[in-house]
Length: 470
Image: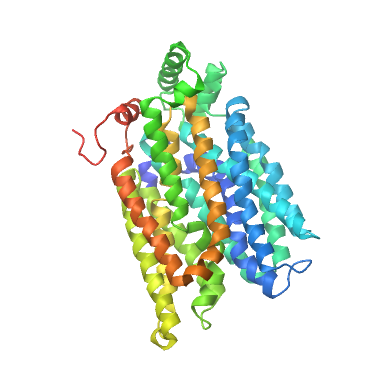
């Protein structure tokens, strides 16, 4: 079924794409360029001296890692802002540190300016990782919740691909300026988007919530009925006996959701995705001297986008669990192949002299399957499995875990390669991917096509997730 047909019953595809895809997800594209910057910029700064001053290998690895530090730091404050300031205002606020980050990175006169620039970019990356999936989840129709949620990963990958591609024709300074200019465009574009109906309703703006829903879904949608249902759910939550945050977190359904979410974002990072993407060009340089390293990196970026497009049309059909398990299994196989290649390269380079294409293929398969499953699905599920009163805090914990582990993986990637070798490092990542498949099989529920009440009932149930539901 074409994607346009999937949207037909909700609103015309063009209008829905205009309101959600091109505006709400555009902020993620700017973050994708932050993620994609280091792969092409690293070799040019370190080997070609394109920076404003000399930068060492360790200093540049810290420059990369400070983005993850910023993402971890921003997680908890962003959760508080989402509740107090609303979804839209929170997203708009973090345009400021993102833009300042590019300014510092572009005109840095000392390495500490690069550190601070990447730290500020990390603040925005962590905030958008939390806030944009929540925003999209609250304005999307339940029937296409997963499809629309996958736009986050799609735009992230498009941003990385843009960074990889633009860098072929420009120097690092020009790449930074172009990236900053794209951030400048995002703020005015997102100002045209409304606050979410759920957030408006919590603030007592029921009429505005109905108008917003009609604007998002089209005049033919039954906005009043949907808002009334949302009002009933919010009133029921307010009328419940007051619980402390501790008691709200320690319900059986919330604990089950936390285990699933923390586990998913942990394995997301332990798959090695950010280490691989941040050092993609470097990996290809180690794999073969005859490869066009820039082109190979672009191919990987293209395959990421292709994988996310596949996720967009399958996540609401195949289901979350199957996509996650398939993703983990194929990522594991890709790492094993990469490990074998580098082991043969180390033992006898003549054995792989005609196999320079193999690391490009293996990494392309890895990022494609990551983009189908472990890339988008955990962030889609965050908006599905948590109650309103704990969603912001739970999202903060998941985001903090993800970025803290991203920092660890980024900083340890080179030491791991030095200690275990290229082959051993990829085999280690493969082992984590195999564990990820087992974890999903045992601890992650299916949420495809289910209402919030059905999901909460399933989370509270003692029935194991791998048993078929009647």
